[in-house]
Length: 188
Length: 190
Image (cartoon, rainbow over the protein chains, first blue to last red):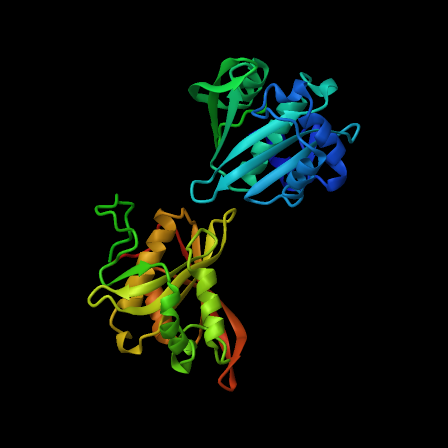
């Protein structure tokens, strides 16, 4: 980890170069609802069915107190202070010191501009340095090469592929399983 | 004495030692626990308060403790020789980030005192904590006058890390609290 990142973790553990990660509140629900019902977003997620405001609110209530078991956060741009997506470490196993990462950039204007990469690095650093994780894992659809590239760039390694594990849009989709260990996170 | 090695489990009995095994507590254990936790001589070794305990309190305690998990891994201590429940032991308030837990031990059956049961139970639970739960540190506190207990804790590798002066008022006087800690790889098995 570069020196700059070492310094940052003490003073601003949830801040990267482009984004900061913050807790979400119920006031964020309309934006989150919009994203989870946007096919541009959900084409790359497991989600298939539409979400009601009621369902989204129920889910959001489980997210408003980030902690070890469920560290879900909002991605906010440093410059505009705008909420552009969600990221989180989920289903942490204390004995195994690992968790599963999930991310979405909900605001289309902010895709392919480095915000997701920065959020990934910031959360992984938080997971290792603050939550004492040893391993972070994630799943990515084989139909999402942009995301796959981002995950590789920050250090995730392809560990296996679940063949035709998902049925969406009238076809079978492979799911890649990736993992990142402590000390493997890359900033440049 | 040799420091515990990270040797593979030769038998799949992670909760068994030489004299005791640890098992989950059951509602049926309530009468024994009621007896022990109302016995001032026992409570004095376990850092308890002097208040009497009701059956309702003991039932509730077991209800909360009966499913051991990472945050709270509470067990009954059973003597291998006759299968009798002789006490309780637990790792509590475990922090996943710090990988640290607080240990509490009560050998309630006084006829088993000073025979090595407590020492063996300590070794089993600490080994379980390190090898199965992936803990980094186990901490405990004892009243300063509990010399037998402190000797046992030191024997399995715990180090005295500090003294909380006049930490507890018990039996008409203030007692110092002794804080002890054991880091992974410091456990002494024999």
